[in-house]
Amino acid sequence: MPPKESDSVEPKPPMKTQHEVSAAERVLLVGIGWKRAPRFPGMPAGELGRESLAELVELAESAGAEVAGTIFQLRDAADPATLVGRGKLEEIRAEANARQVPLIIFDSELSPVQQRNIEEVTERRVIDRTQLILDIFARHARSREGQLQVELAQLNYLLPRLTGHGAQMSRLGGKSGGGGAGGAGGGAGRIGVRGPGEKKLETDRRRIRERVRRIQESIEDVRRQRALRREARNAVPLGTVALVGYTNAGKSTLFNALSRAEVLVSSRMFATLDPTVRALRLPSNRRILVSDTVGFIRGLPKGLIAAFRATLEEVQEAAVLLEVSDISNAYHDELEQEVEKILGELAVTERPRLRVFNKVDKLSPQMREGLRAAWSRRAPGEEPPVFVSALTGEGLDELLRRVDEVLPVDPLVRLCLHVPLSEGRSLALIHALGRVMHSRVNDSHMDLEAEVPEAMAKRLKLEEFKVKGTSPSSSAYL
Ligand code: GDP
Ligand code: MG
Image (cartoon, rainbow, N blue to C red; front, side, top):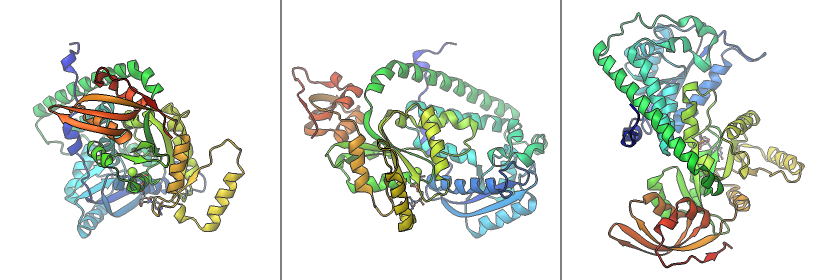
């Protein structure tokens, strides 16, 4: 059946409430290293697993969880029934009891059977790394495509789990292991897969497949529409600055520190629409939006890549990118190269960018001086990084000055508008990025006179709301 116009699916609102990790929930994290996993010469066994677990801590914190403890085990091979051995499971259970955590997160991918068995032994909710990442994406997905992609990834994750036997056993160990986990297949179907009756399962599966199909069609629709608008869009990036970088670089801390510097009334208005976007004022008095984005994640499971990209849509629309990195991290060079690669894939390498070296408070004065000196010797024309500490506030003024320099000038236009109140986002943007002279609410509309950046006026198609007989007078920012 060809999709009718009305057939297209809206992202399901429950997405926002289906979070696996609720705010400040205490969690216990379990990581596994595989003795036979490939590794660089000189790297101790299990090192990759340990790094992965450290990243899981960061991810759990991003999802709003409080990490009550971590457990790491080096193993030869995966136990098909429970991933780790019985003894370890008992230890995990005791730890979960002692620390009073309701949720255990495994760093490795769990088969449905393993997940259930572990839940039974530990008497706790158990999720794996993929579910946690999906949870984080769901929080960040704003655009329609982003929400659809995340839901699609969630359903694709769920589908094989409904059947009670699936391909996921062979993927066991995934990114964090591989080596020793290869022989784990085949056990899943044997162990008490009762659950809901087969008939119910069949209906559920059919329903989910149907929804998957419709979501895929809707994503195609969204893409087609976007392709039509692309030209206009590229020409007019919104006055948005996007924070990009690896998980744990300090993006959210910086985001909060920057928006604390000045809380505009309109900023609060905007925050209710969009918790990861805030308005602030640059030294030149220009107003911009800052957007906190989902952090890049090492070894992202393959099934999540499309969802990850779609949640980064605001990066594609941003006028300036701030590449935040944790300068105190010994691997920050490698991480930055990874970020560069992802930005390349998003086709935004030509966008004005500033490198922000965060956490300078963790460096000794000598190290800071050394860094600065090294950068001042670099080729002229290369944008030097901005050194900041989101924690202490050091360097934030300098950062705002530099953003002012690289943000393209966008002249203001004065408009008299008659905007339906249902256009909440547009109204919030006008208030956040423009200067509203007068405004009055009449029934279902807001009448207002405002100066707004020209690019934004185009982008929001404010022409449509213009009161006839008014002619905008241009005035440039000073
Ligand atoms: P995100 O994943 O990039 O959003 O990173 P977060 O903002 O969540 O920060 C990750 C961790 O780094 C948190 O524990 C922060 O408290 C810490 N952090 C962030 N900025 C700084 C900083 O400038 N100095 C120090 N010492 N710690 C920071
Ligand atoms: Mg964050």
